[in-house]
Image 1 (cartoon, one colour):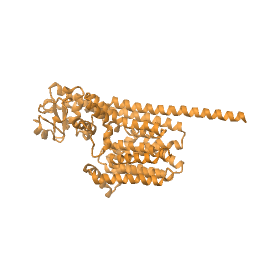
Image 2: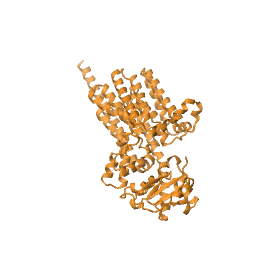
Image 3: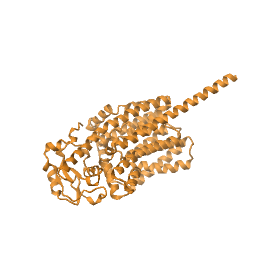
Image 4: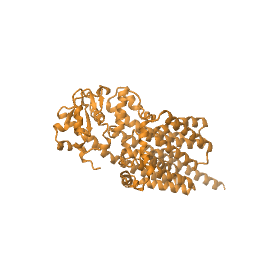
Amino acid sequence: MVTTLTTNTTSYQMTVMQLSSWQKTEKLLIFFFLVVLIVLSLVFYKERIIFTDTVDMLRSMLREGSWIVTTNRYTSVFGQFLPLAAFKLGLPLTQIVIAYSLNLILIPVVFCLVSMYWFKETKTAWSILLFYTIMNARLFYFPVSEFQIGLCFLLFYIGLYQHYLQKKINSYVFWTLSALFIPTVVFSHPLSVLVLSGWIALQFFINKKPWKTTIGMAALAIAAAVFKNVFYNIPYEADKKQGLERFKEFSLDYFNSGLATQFYKAICDDYFLMPILAIAAIAAFIYTRKYIAAALFATALVAFWVLITISFMEEPYYYYTEHMYQPIIFFTALAAGRYLSNVLAQRLVVVSLSIILIISINKIFIEKEYWQRRLRWYEAAFELMDKKGIKKAIIGVGDIDFFRDAMWITVFESAILSALEGSDHAKSITIVWNEEAARSVMNEKENLIGVGLNLLPISELPVKYFHIGNDSYTMLSDIYTTEELRKLAYCNEKD
């Protein structure tokens, strides 16, 4: 009997040692993927920052010298600590841009690390990693999304909630943090309220009916939503809701729209792992006899897909609509990262998720070419301007092969990109819809011209970084032929 006891003890010790070794391997894998995301954000900092809303946010930071809150979505400030600090320290513009790209990726990185060392689990980290990779080939280059930041907060909060259910933190800490996290999620985007509501309903049928906690979280969410709608009603968000009018005359033809067909293509070409993960999650819920949770999960995926596909059916599938489809990414990442281990061996889950992350990150890496072509167009245009000593130029959209849905802030994209070489290299290009209409403002010397021919004072840009001067504008088509202009790098774009 002593021999048997000794054998059992030895076997138990070996099992514990093997488990400990595997847990270390799992953490090392997570660290590896986090480092890869950091490296990508540093290597492709121009691609991530010199683009639309992100570059406009940076321009506003440089102009105001303070945090910028867009449309009352205060989650935006969490991505601004490093670039603002770099600006206050007087660092070069290149370092400010790099700091911005790094700061935006540090949001998920920090949440992953905190979850592993505070919650003592890896499910939250896997969910966040999947959320930032499995359907992000375009979104990775649009990192300013307050929606994405808010849902990342929610994924971390879910880990906190599970930690609380296991009685590893006291009620005071949980509800104090809930009062901070839930409003942050609600304020991040109008759809975040629906995502939060969907999760509250889903978790109620996964965990052991935590009535009081569920009611408390729902009450906080409702209070935050009411407060936001009463005191921070935003016209921009109201305009975006106009697509909901289509539901009054619902038609199956909506699912043959340009956005719908391009979404199908994106799933087949880039995101074929998404439906596989979703089906696996549904199977996991069914296997554990959580039938209502399985139904709610599937309903959430379909409902959000229908909502976005119909509301934005006239839009192409590009960075913005990929950003709007994030609820689908959220629920898929949440279920895959947190619940697959309930039915599969942890080793199998970790290996599978690692393979998925490798494939997904590779998709992000491949997508860089599109954004680099865009930067090459600017750089080639700068060369033409330098030949004639031009600092401010206008070019008509008819003379380029351009991504026309993302040209609204070329005036500042070009200014910041050119100024990375030094303040004396700073110049500005405005792409306009109508060259002839733009001729009426070409004599502007103290202002830059926006795509809508609006005037933007040069003095708002810090002189330390931008020596654009007071020259008049030059229409590039007046000194270069259409053939010369269309030879710029962007005319090779395939999409």
